[in-house]
Length: 406
Image 1 (spheres, helix red, strand yellow):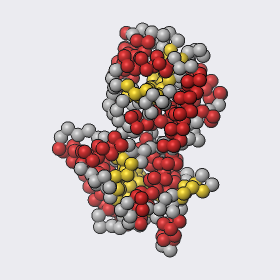
Image 2 (cartoon, rainbow, N blue to C red):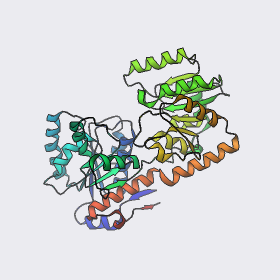
Image 3 (cartoon, rainbow, N blue to C red):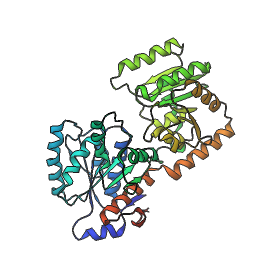
Image 4 (cartoon, rainbow, N blue to C red):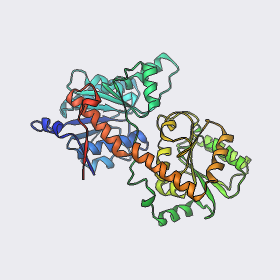
């Protein structure tokens, strides 16, 4: 299916040009913000608009350029005040050169440059807030405020929406709640072949009869890998294995801490640290239970949604975006953060599900994702915000809706 902008929007521009929408993000690497940028850029292009992405490059640039999206490399990743000031002139030149209609920024540092660059041009300025950024001083709060200056500000969860209202006194009429979406054509049990699972299982060296507890997420303390190791020590079941998928990204000391903790708990043979996985759908299919043990609240969190899309029981921490994506007692468990005992109890309950109970949970979870968290829903709602700005609408309810064509 191909997304497209409303006919009247493209029609009113055809005499001169299609709508030109520029997204700005520090880099096109791994991560939810980057994935959303790529998905939306391709959707704009497919809809008959002109999509431009400004970033400092990255491994995923080819995912947009192969669809004829224009990528422009600028040092928009830099937080250096001099670089920010130089980027104002660079971005203003690009806005005028490409006759940009909307500038959509997805990060704080480039938000400052883009906000200033849009002044004096015809471009409308909007942002997406991907996380509840911490601030412990007035200076840091001021720096973060760039993300709240858009004519429209997309919040990726109710949690982020409340953060914007409470932290920056943002008018609720300015905010558009758009949850992140995942590609169902990729995250669905039927698309994973047995061969893919066999290959991955050999790499992990997990016995065929074992239960697998999966925790995806880069190795950083707040992702809660240590909490899962402590919980595994309480389960005391030699047929249960834990796989931690994620690179340490240079955090070698934390990785050593985890390895030491595994040795102290006698779990070196039962817990695997896998630096990277190129086939996450197969990883979910190999798992018996998926865990998202973040000790700090996440703005959204893709892991719970991907796990549910694959029909797997999910255990998440009871804060942040997880409260909006996991149906408590229906598609998974929500437990207190940093609580190994509660996590061990939830894992035990999940492992005790019989086949019929797992099937019911899987059906609920997959339906939940289909109704709320698909890439198509996210794209439709984002293009609707663009429509508002292109038409000068003040209310999303009055803007034309997007459609799909086969």
